[in-house]
Length: 359
Image (spheres, rainbow, N blue to C red):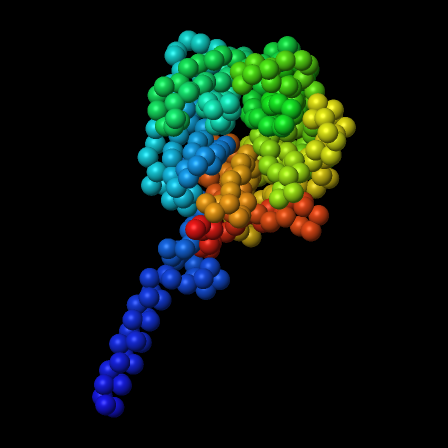
């Protein structure tokens, strides 16, 4: 009997150790560089600037800037993004105003159809003309899933000024949809000095704007003026349904690229005074965690809908700028007692984090 008891204890000990070695432990107990089945490490994939994700049904549809085409990845779990299949959904014809430098695509589902908004320009030997010709465009698909090549080019989406525009996104409200983007005051680059503001206009339909644009934000605080940029707007609501407009400030070519926020306090999003800008950035570089230039973000809900997560790009080292070294990362966010977003500090890529909550 004594020998049987000893043997049983030894078997229990060995099984327990075996389970421990498989990584079945809480996030706080996991050591560096040892993600388990309930944890993950940033970055999610090896490169990907301007990451965007849309949760639809039980799938996450992810995209980022490729420069030359539009691609999507579909996954049931964002922590498994690297294993998702890549589908090219559209490639521009050559020689058009929208054939070159395709940037910051966003997927939206509006009126039971899929829309992909993106910035593009035309090829030119003169780099200033390449930059000056940037505008927003949109494609449409009526397929059940966006993971196909059945997309129709709907054309340029612009307000009546048709000025420089990038990083378009959509604000959905009960009374209709609004388009928000980063743009210039004029078409004259020296006069504009490359300064980027945020604009909004009402959408007549998913590919047409109506009425005049309204400027709702411009670089004004010191932390926004290292490059004079407001760009990458994205809408997210707190648990009470209040609307926040997140954006990236300062130049992406600097380590000081960071995330700020405006809150819609009035009922009319076309009234600039209805948007209140928070005086401090929400999310910025962490030298301690070796994260530089975090920004151009989007958001998503966890699979069970109980958590909010931010998806953003960043560099691992100082001075890496706007190139292909930017990688997508994600981390859970919180809301304070007043319903204000708390993004925290960009996470250390060597520390495993708990995966989004799932049933």
